Amino acid sequence: MIDAAVSALADLFSPRLRRVLLKSIGLALLLIVIIGIGLHHLIAALADNGATWAEQTTGFAPHAAWTTLAFVLSLMAGLGIITGALFLMPTVTAFVGSFFVDDVADVVEREHYPAEAQGRALSFFRALIEGLKFALLTLVVYLCALPFILFAGLGVVVLLVANAYLLGREYFELAAMRFQPPHEAKALRKRNSIMVFLAGLVIAVFVSIPIVNLATPIFAMAFMVHVHKTLAGAHAELIAPPR
Image (cartoon, rainbow, N blue to C red):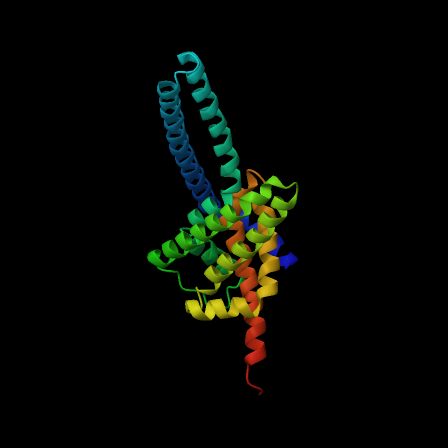
């Protein structure tokens, strides 16, 4: 697994993956900015309307006080959105990465496994569905883990474990589905659940590093291609008939 992680890191700087990396980072940043701006405008509008309603209903305090309160609330909301964007980075990068996983896998398979059969690219709709499913599942898990953030250290551990499971599962199955039907890919992942979780833990640590985590889809997919090749090869040896 260490060799696979080192190879994936080296693959990040491969000339053939550099363009994919830049496109993935650019799209992830654009999506985060759009979501952030949209949420900020929504929360600011709610704060303004709430302050106006409170002023008209209670008649307490001058207009300037309510305006200042609305401004402070919108500013706090903006800071909260920035913090939330950091926690939602795995969700955003995973969704964006679903559009580039086959480009990454093609390069890694051709460069590291030229003598073996190449995988088949997932259809656009399959990749989109997998990306949406994973993004929604991650969002639900994050919302469930949110209360634990209030306890020192516990929230970090919960998010790390959740990311390890979710990221390991998602990227391993994407790598495996290039060679197998979805149900077989899921079965292979379940047979190797401990190894896939440990591999997911490596990705979870990677995605927890600010700025660097923008490259998560490229690193994660390259890493899981190597992991899948190892586990699929071991499984093939186990089921191969005796000569």
